[in-house]
Length: 215
Image (cartoon, rainbow, N blue to C red; front, side, top):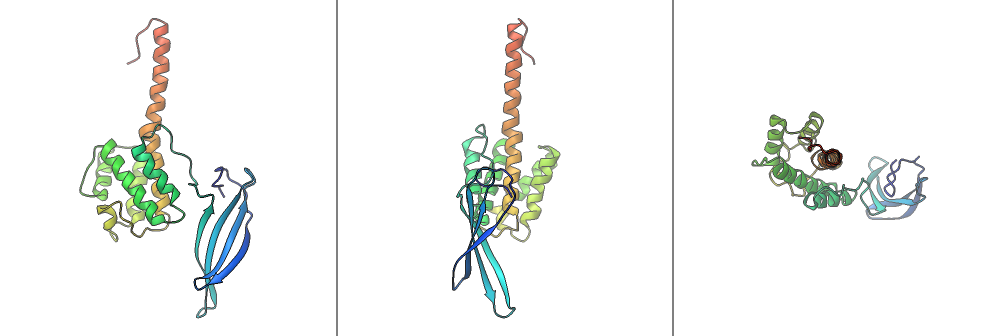
């Protein structure tokens, strides 16, 4: 697994410590020690015994240490009006995928409207317009298009009409949204900034040699 402290992959060795039971079922602490940074990782796990089936059903597992986003930091070049929603979506992902998805959808819509100059009635129509106009590389277009399928907008129209609403999400939808935002940050902010820096450095060399800037 990937360590949420240092983001390095390590061999997962799990220790489970029972901490008690209540009306909601059994409670355990799942402990892992990262072999890279030597820090402990704790998850709180809840399960419940079902008398009708005779089985113990796992209900939930949430990360309780570290209380940070287990994703790479947003590059400094990304403006705060985009990075703030993304960062918060990462922070709440473990506790509430629904809240995380709402924040990431809002961020996606804001990027589409501000950077791609597309504004329609709802997010579905805006995504379709971006695809129809081919405004992004194919791999990013495919990834954005998948948000509509993963999110099942047809069954949950609230998602497309009010992107900030806390509504049900499909498995892995919230994390996929974050992946797409990372791709957009790289394409719209990081890559152009890197190209501009290389261009500036080349122009500086040309000027030193008494030549004109490259066009």
